[in-house]
Image 1 (cartoon, rainbow, N blue to C red):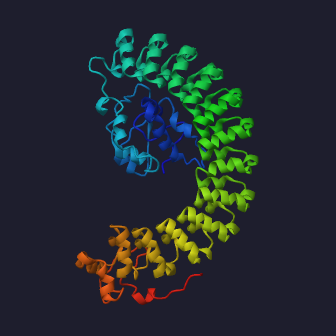
Image 2: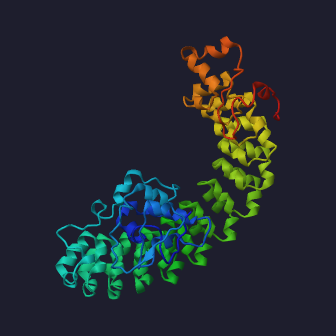
Length: 490
């Protein structure tokens, strides 16, 4: 995973905060993808740090450099050719590398990220590129106004006097709210300018100066982006209406609230209901509150991991949790992972939960059958001897034929088992032994008669091999190795 310095840069071909704001409807989607790189469960980097990079930092990256061990950005003046994207941003593979294939597949939306027309970095030919314009052109009010109406961030190249021009700055901000960064300090204090900016991109509150203490400005900002609370004046981080609005927009904004607000049950529940990861920022007293933790668990079983140990030991509470998400069993106390009632409930809700059961309950036939009935892939979490249990494997492939991939090699060499699997999944045949595939393909017109007429489930004497997940092959083990039954508890 790449790491980013909050004060420097991230591997993008232009300043990241500009990328985010330009595509309004896509902003949160892209931001959330890149925020995932910081691992909300840990680390010291604020998700918002990714959206607010050093004003002088520009980065260029190619697919080749992304694949290398080091990722280097260079810092330069704002007059650098930041529009010179080199096609990297237009490349969906670059974006998927940046988000580490973890959160969102931008797919066809990638085209929206072509920062300027066609990714060429060229403005409308009728308007000179202010980045290379003469001082006279940068001081031309008409030319600059036309330029910022097309792309607000070109305000950075305007003369100092025009960056203090209210009409030009307001036009730039309306086209691109982050353009407020390039306005004069005096205009950072203009209510109309900052209200326009924060209503379009809350994080521009960063530039608001004394207006960070203005309730209307801050409330508008956090309604657009809850994380803008970070830039509010300290006393407004303790303002109930503002903090509530922030966490309702983004639950993890609780991070930036005052300690008093973090102890406010109403605020914390609102935050957790919006994003269960907000539990990370709740105080211990509220992490023992069943209502608070359950609000998170109803979204994701991993929320139980934030609960205090006493709640993880509470059988009644854990039952509530696993009925919502069976895999919450993972975070329950050790003794509850061996509690049959708890485990039965967990695997009935999500078969995958069997992976977190005690060793003895992983051998309980009723629990195993419940698990594979709910999710046939639960078979993959069991021990090799269980994967050789014919009755159990038949139950699994009768739910999901592709569960055949988890069966012991000898059962993938069993005609009846394979037929049961492909009856429920046309792709299951790929997991069968070569010899069984040959038998089935040779009798494609009467599949159902294969096991009846042959009077055997086994195909002997084959040298064909098919690899499985643990590196064995279908001919490594014969039918005899799968012939034993009763290896599991009743």
